[in-house]
Length: 118
Ligand code: PCA
Image (cartoon, rainbow, N blue to C red; front, side):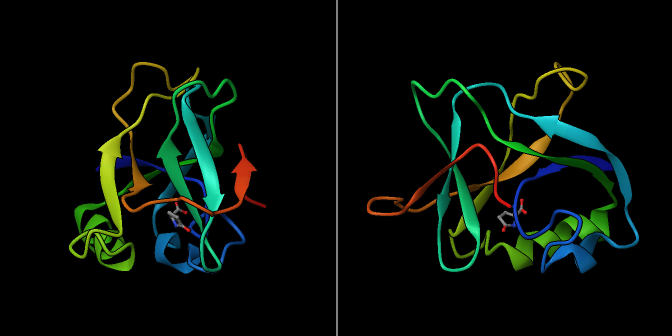
């Protein structure tokens, strides 16, 4: 099993949450400072941003290997849309190995959404 931090359409109530339906919710979480959300085309993208003080809010899920492969397809990892990478989270997940989908393309001109995608 892998721990994944989700912050957008994969969250509970989100349009892609069905992909996590048979996986296990672990808890609400926040990244360490240094990450920011931008509005893309109907979904958010998280990127590293030096100087950010707030981090990003989301949920940690425990997912199986088949689900993880599905999520990689959904997020366009092979096409270079998102990269799945370890992200540092605050307590109670500090020091745990948790990955998230970081947006891999430019956010120039995109709306800054701050820490939370609603
Ligand atoms: N889905 C992934 C990345 C962005 C998105 O909308 C997520 O919820 O974490």
